[in-house]
Amino acid sequence: MRKKLVIFGAGKIGRSFIGQLFSRAGYQVTFIDIAQSIIDLLNQRNSYKVVIKAEKEEQLLIENVNGILATDAEAVQNAVAEADLLAVSVGKNGLKKVIPRIAEGVLLREKISPGRALDIIIAENMRDAAEFMREELAGHLPEGFHQEQRIGLVETSIGKMVPIMSKKDEEADPLQVFAEPYNTLIVDKKGFINSVPDIPGMSPKENMKAWVDRKSFVHNLGHAATAYLGNFYFPEKKYIYEVLDEPWLRQKIKATMQQAGEILQANYPEEFNQQAIDEHIDDLLLRFANRYLGDTVYRVGLDLPRKLGPEDRLFGAITLARALNKPYDNILKAAVAGTYFQATDEAGKLFPADATFRRIHQDSLIKILIEICKLDPAKDAEVFAQAKQIKKELEKDLHQHKSKKI
Image (cartoon, rainbow, N blue to C red; front, side, top):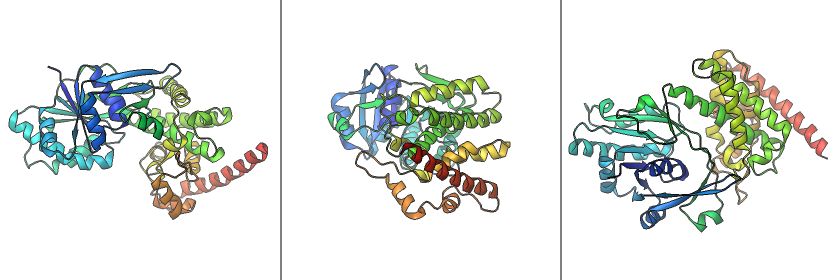
């Protein structure tokens, strides 16, 4: 009998990463999703392709998979009750919708198999994801339910890059998904109640908070810096690799990531050393520059209200830098460049949240710092002053850059 992984979310990360790892490790993988067409195809084929985009393209056939429509409450409840392991890959907003269904399944599980614990892999890039899920679950479980003994909440660091596929590629095969070769799933070793499953590619860590912050404040931050600085200086460039083909801009982005790395190292001196951070940054830049992946500036930079938020990749790192009395000017420069971001999709349209952002804020830096970044003009006066000066320098630099091109 195969062990059963049940995963909420049959999206790109769910299929290309979580489903792939566990299927190839011998699990039966059941996807739960709201997309009827995807669920129908999973049940028809019981397999799908992951296309690894690199100099040498590789196609992986992921087998022993099936699907359940999220609206089929009874089937979802039974799947959770019978699972050996659960995973979620639906985004923070999606979590609030699936947690009631998880709670129902857990209660049925307790009725059928009293005391049988269930570990949940939270495949989301969220800080304090386990705490969020614990509080949400508590609201849907009866008073006195021993959640700590029954439900293991396993945070992850999702570092795999999955590009937006063209409409043509999606229509050719709605189940196939493109992804980079990187295939390491970092998980919180302490989050498991049952024994940690032996899954090739899964890397359990003791200090998960440090690794979640590494993903947010080095990987995500570096990616955002690439998109925002790239779009600021070269709005005509569509792909991330094109931005990194400019040596002087690549150096600016690297310096920004190194500044973030210094902040991370200062906060977690026992977890990261200089050499490890430098090697990670060099590896990330090579991965970002993977032209075969076809990752776009639009995908990497979209959703300004979230990515310029107070706890996200840029201003989260700035807040930590200020607490540690570390410099953050390069990071702030990338954030200010982000306020100009106007990359569009293949149809020439802004991401909906970015279109609203542009309409409401009209490039008003002060308004953005207050309303989006949640900074206080009095308490955070130093950041406001630096940001205004950086804005002037960026615009002057852009003017000089355009003059050279002419």
